[in-house]
Image 1: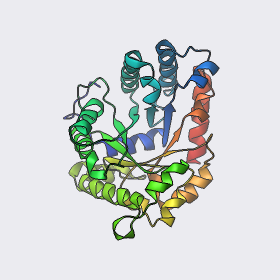
Image 2: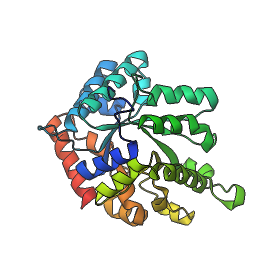
Image 3: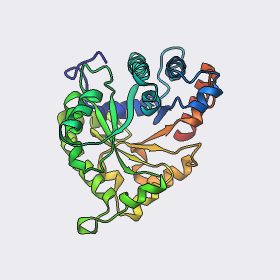
Image 4: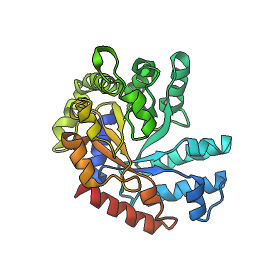
Length: 305
């Protein structure tokens, strides 16, 4: 990215503005082998580059208007191609930046100490070729182990999305487990994220964003990942997502079974914070750019009706 932290508004207001402008849609860029084959592309670095650049192109209208609030490349599917794959990812992030669309690097990094600092620098520091607007993180070495990434994101006007309630069956054994005070691990993650976001929302930048928002959510630096098929789980675990000040990245719409109606019902008062992720539901319309644009428009119409 070419803009500097000094020029960049904090991430929460930038994302909220993009959601109001283009709709609350995040398009997952997932160049997995099956989709590449369906698009007639080779499972090579050249194939994933063609795939990725087509998705970025389709995410803007012919006049340059953004059709989505964010793009979320799945890092593992680039990483499997080694250095050449990472080079494609760097160019994809730059292409999205040039198109004016926010990026979320879906890397789910999580570690401690200097290693976590290294991950933070790679994905969130000005000047890094992999710097995205936001990064997904795994908190299961302890929420505070993510502090280097949270602090760097705040200082550079970027954001993080921390796994909180995921829809994979294995996740419940950790996320629903009760810790100190009989509070679930997921509830503790959300509570800590809310505390970080209160720090952001006390700033003049956030207050100005709230005043100009008109409608929609006012969001902090720390977002949360909450599966679109299980938002009602938050209520059962006594988690108040609406009070978190967090953007809620919600994978699972469409191909995985979540509908607009089920998400509105499940997220309830937190619905204005939800950034709906769709990957296969959109990508299967490729490889033609106009077909992808049509699917993107229809998806946005569905989730905003």
